[in-house]
Structures are given as structure tokens and as C-alpha cells.
Length: 155
Image: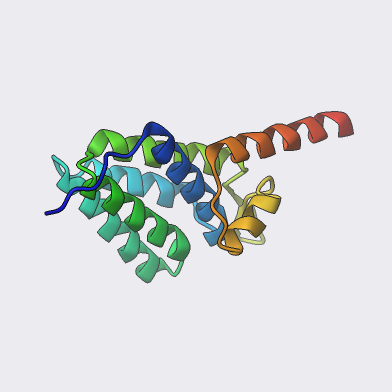
């Protein structure tokens, strides 16, 4: 198999940021995000990256959520796998994705007996993602800092 150049840590961080915003776009739940991390640990070795990609696509099909996230997760896991990376690289990507999702307000709220997923802080990041633009971790941090400072001045 042809191996590409190893990914940089910044590449992995940015992939994680993009996936985290995609979780918001897809209306993912915290539990769905956790299950993807659990899938990574279900198999030893680098093959676990392929399991994660397959699991994400399965969940997208089964639950009718995670559609865009599943594509980004699959792409990220294949990039890591084809560059010779392993589980530790995948943990970085998926861990950052989880943190970004949570920082953007990705949580479940019960409204009228239904669990509604919210990402109240995602705003312009979601718009950019929907336009097909790449989002970096640095941009997410700037966005969150701006959002948090606006909340502080409104109090």
C-alpha cells in the first residue's frame, strides 16, 4: 500500500476542529460522539481507524444523523491510516472533535419530551462549514473567545 507523508499535529488538530463543528451541523448527541471514541478502542492496532470510519458511516445510515460528520471522520481516519499513523493520531483528532463540539454548546436539551441538540455558539462556523470552507482549530478558538467575551459584556 502506498503511504503518504505523515500528518502534522496541526493537520490532526484542524481535522478534529472540522469534525467537531460538523457534529453540530448534524445535530449529533454527546452519546453519539462518545460511541465513536469507544469504537476506536474496540480493536487493537491501526485497523481500529478503519473500524471507526465504518462505525461512523453505519451510525449515519442507522440513525439518520452524523451524515456530514461521518464523511469527515471517514476521510480523517483514512488519511491517518494511509500516512502510517495509528490510534494515538486518531485519539487526537477525535478528542479535539469532542472538545470543540462541547465548547460550541453541543448538548442535549429536553423540550416537550424530545431531546433537541443545540450548538448555540457555533454561529458563523456552521455557515462556513455549509459553504464547504475548511475550518481550523485556531479559527474555532478565536470564534469561541469572541463569543465568550460578548457573553461577558452582555451580563
